[in-house]
Length: 389
Image 1 (cartoon, one colour):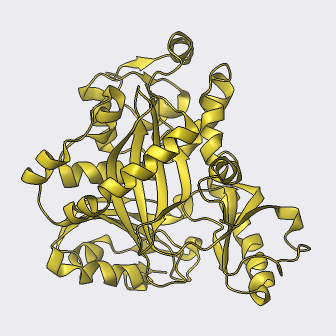
Image 2 (cartoon, rainbow, N blue to C red; image 1 turned 30 degrees about the vertical axis):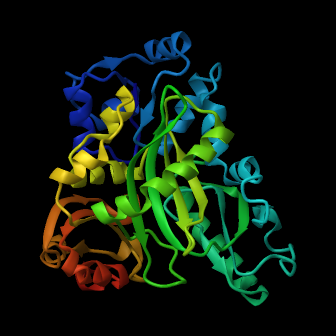
Image 3 (cartoon, one colour; image 1 turned 45 degrees about the vertical axis):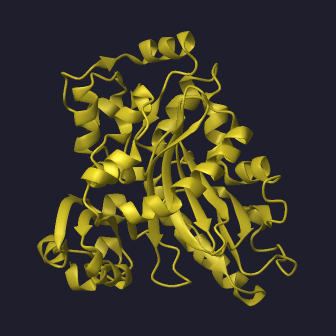
């Protein structure tokens, strides 16, 4: 069963729904976003009945916004509780603290940020909303002297955050402070199958321009990345599965892996893979299989067979967040043609309204292993070369 909600649904996901005749819930938002009336639309009452008859029926949503529908209509099931086990970062930390007994974290109320003393916190630490998305409101605090400046930034950002996302997606009333995790960051798309075992569908390397960078700009996947981390990630997810006890449940989990191979989770997003239909669509470009269909049907990738036929290149998503310093409402245009010329092999460009979405769009691209410089360049770009204002 598929739940569609704002802000974006990809052509590939819609084609998947059509090809496999997957039931899609006919909410008003979904029907507004997806105009294809030939799909297997089911009423909201029918969707609720399906869950009552089969509490572990696979449910996939393209968006965090659909959480509110689940909370409103599926309270009789475990789904709302399962979602918030992950969506609330503080609750998630408390659930897995036995796996990481020395890890520092602390819940904070927004109303307390001005008055709380952080002198006894473990520095450096990260502060972010307990319910968040797209690195919104996320800041690094290197020492006690930076605290007031960071709090000021958070206050100014909250005004914009509330414009774009409901409380179910980004709740700025509560925050979590947690220690900085050393290592490289990776995003994992996976699901817990009918036997409650985790199945990995993609592993993407989240690239940063510096140690201070906390933004979402470039995620890359490749044969090399999957081969290097598959077994280690599988072992970690097996331990997580013992703690969360989930059936037919998709997640997008972000982790850090240090030099010794130790994996520490940063956050987990429930009921979906990468937001804006990104990392699952990327896996299809890179490896040829359909992650949405694999989840719904409980199928597992045969990585050995996949690697024998797919290209050994870097497949990346580039999120065109506005880090130019130019206010969104002052942007006149963005030169997408110039952007495309800066990449070896663009695969797909999703243009968005910067005022409505806070990003210029998302680019999917394929890069030869010897041409990584194009990714390094966009990673550090302020995008001003593409902007008219």
